[in-house]
Image (cartoon, rainbow, N blue to C red; front, side, top):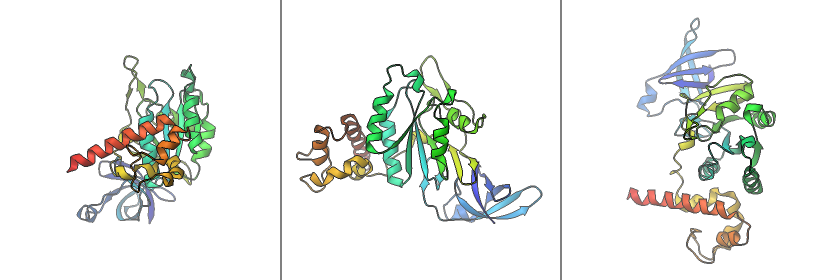
Length: 293
């Protein structure tokens, strides 16, 4: 029998089949092979107690996508939630996350939440930067359900992961999609305007037969050091059309003269602030690589 792992707490896995959910454990052979089942895995199971819905995992099917932290497999779309205000937008984090989505080959949607709190309407500039690149942007006010239906439409037929710093409104959005409290509400501390992370386990919530969403703790802090600094430009997708204009093969697009990407920035064809964040991420990756040696 085959099923989908929809929840993992410690070494117990909830596996959804066509008609029910089984509580499962994994065979010892997986430890020997140094592989563990994770949420999102499609697995083969053997039922050991039909009455109590207990089974064991026999085999993990080949993964199309795997994320190390938090451990998650086979997602097809990531929804990056950015707060327009309280906490203020973290575009450096967003650009890291978008690069990672491009690297693993997963679709990306950007949600600008809490637009009602942004009295200066800075979110309009953020929307322009990323929509010009080609990303889908949805403006939401989760507490008043604005933008929820549009977002629901974009989730269809995907295994979706929600990502973003604590306090940006991920849980409120997910609760809004289901129109009930399926995840615990995160709080924003009024004193320091920082979010308190209340989500404790990776879990897939089913919207319909082919649509799931994952609420994933720690996703906003994932490590993108799998990307080599020399390849980072490949995952800033607006850079691609200008790379052939670089004079030097192996141009880093940082210090070189006659760089096609830097020229495009000067001409306003690439957003200057996004290029500056590219440089920051590049230098961070480069520094980590040098420290390894």
